[in-house]
Length: 167
Image (cartoon, rainbow, N blue to C red; front, side, top):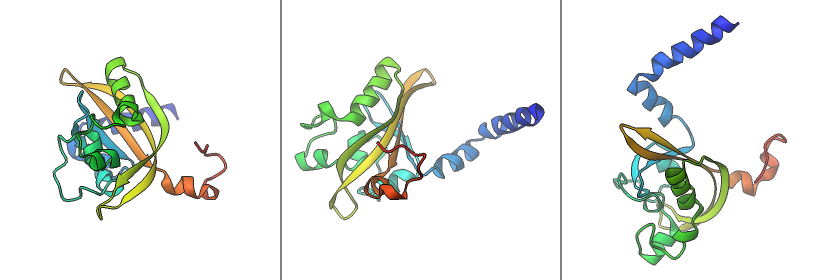
């Protein structure tokens, strides 16, 4: 049994060295994965970003700030850059990202309810579960932010298995 586990880990390690393999894995994850820099600008993302946050489906969102890329209603309504709206100083996503970046703090499975704009330019309330963590790549620090849209689960708690905690 131990030998099988060792071989499985070794096999995955070999596959993980393939950029193509990693892209396939990341793009098949249904949670939105954002890689952000110190200014909360988007450096990379997976395909789930466009399905969960679809207000910018045809735009190039790379290098936009997080709130601009995900259609933050406050940023759109106030016509201000992400980081400069009246709500940014208390935005849990922004605070978690900065806490992870500056203090190497791992934020895990926090819950927020926020308004966002969709591709039809309509405001909708989303419940999100999010996690953040800092990592280093080529001597630069980055934030990985994982966003999961749990709106349906929050609105329909009877669909949850009994073992899943509701936040």
